[in-house]
Length: 507
Image 1: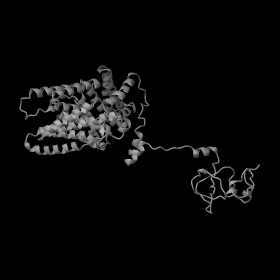
Image 2: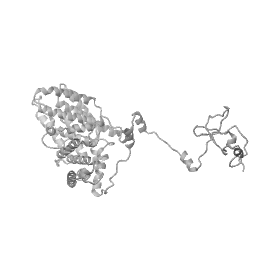
Image 3: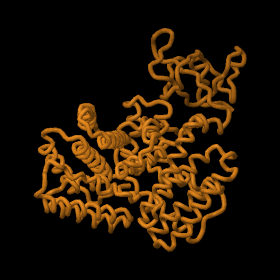
Image 4: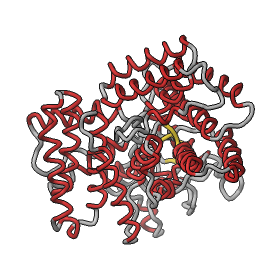
């Protein structure tokens, strides 16, 4: 049997090439006599050449023969099997996405680069241990879908769902049981009422006590974080249940764990836990400066949270730097109240100028992850809330360390604050609202504050909102009753919450 045309070896002298695989079909010009025997040409066998077979072949365009004319056929031998052909010539794509472009512009490497890719991946699922069923499962879902979103202004890095949930479901020892029961207690209180929450709260306290007295802490290295989280979650329960009255106990226990960890030179707790405790510690000291201990837990938490920079932290509502400045003002206020002589005024003025400069220059930013998983409206709400914290901190600083010209500046800051509140459909942070409310002198402003408080109470149903409202109304009444008294004696509004009642007013 003969082929219709000569073999490729006879048509064109074979030559080696390192060029890539050819891509176009050609018909060569040079021909040598071929006997067209199938499967191999006898001329090639006789001259000990490799017969390249018959049929169409491919060549790389632009290749010329040794005489500079025409084209030489490049010898590309097809794979020996069909499977190899499919494997080598299958369709593969590497697509560029927006994250790739952003990463290249930001010169991201290593963990920063991986973080951009992992943000959209599924988070930890429920535990592989004994299943959670019945009412517990309903309350756990309520915690994830309602409570965790209520107490954070951001979504991408919401530690209450992304960190606390996996921690609580990691195993079934005393510490994790205490944490999960505290979470269920909050959900039960908010969803079903105080009666349904009582047993969960009792179990959480009992299991936490068991974790401290038992051998769990010697068995697992991660239990210190779980115990700290359980203490903080019990403190959060006191925020929801205004009749609980044990907020300061759990806050003191959390601070003690941080102090012991530092003394033993253990690794620091996670950044989320440090910022969570910082939030409680700073706002707790704002309401009760007499409770400030010699061991500065706030400073330890600030030091451990430095990497967050000026990013807005969801469970704070602002950046760590804002809380750091509030912490400094709390200390300034405490020192000023203890010093009656004028010798301390100069350092206070210097501190005021330094802190005011930081506040004026501070720009709070959203973490890049927020741009990937939140809507523009959600991002706008987060930025406005953070700005309200900044404005409230400036107003607080002016009152603690007054200077000439503060009144005119205060009016401008109040106008900015009310403009910001007008843009918010839902207000979530109590502390800025309290400061702005206490600085409000006009009836129109006070009416706006009362409407916001009504909406917060309807939307959040958290116990400390009603207590904060009582403090605001009490201050307003005293201001109005003392309007004809000596104006040089400023009625310090923070004294209306520093009354010996250990209420978590502003968290």
